Amino acid sequence: MTLANLNPFNGNGVFVAQYLRRLTERLDLGAEFVYQKDPRMPGGQISALSYAARYTMPDYIFSGSTALNSATASFTTAHLCYYHKQSDHLQFGVELEANFRMQDVNTTFAYQIEIPDSIILRACCDTNWTVGAVLEKKLSKQFPFTLALSGMLNHVKSQGRFGIGLIVG
Image (tube, rainbow, N blue to C red; front, side):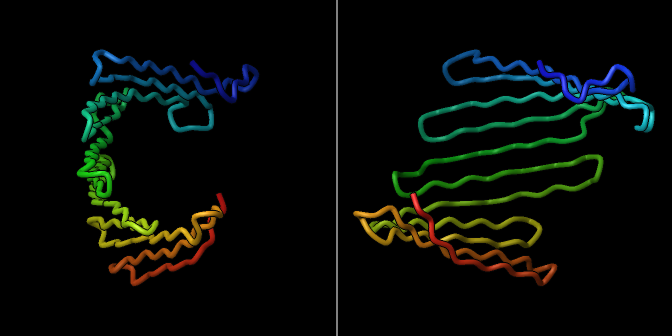
């Protein structure tokens, strides 16, 4: 449990309660309740209830969560994830995010490839037409220096971001 910004003189504050439980070796379930009271908010208060689950196997993980608006008893969001480790060098995942209140859904596919000679390539694309990639190359086996090249391009907005970095550690 957490209390935040508690001020009895103004009558505002946030209360958060979370419960996470491992039911079996592979199945975890959890719930979260958030209550906020503030006279400056419309209605003066708001609360939300969220549920989450995760199923784990040696080569894949499936997880999901959803949020419930306590005032209207309707689902406001859903979040589903699938991660798969194909081999020691290849792994990928798919994520679905849905916001029912905003009527917005986004799905992302991502993968990571580890190539011999200390090269790692990560890339993703989503249903908003955003494509991104990061290439990391270890510069030396004796020293902890890694060169990183990255880029992200949103085709709908005609926006691109590109970068180069040096990772120490």
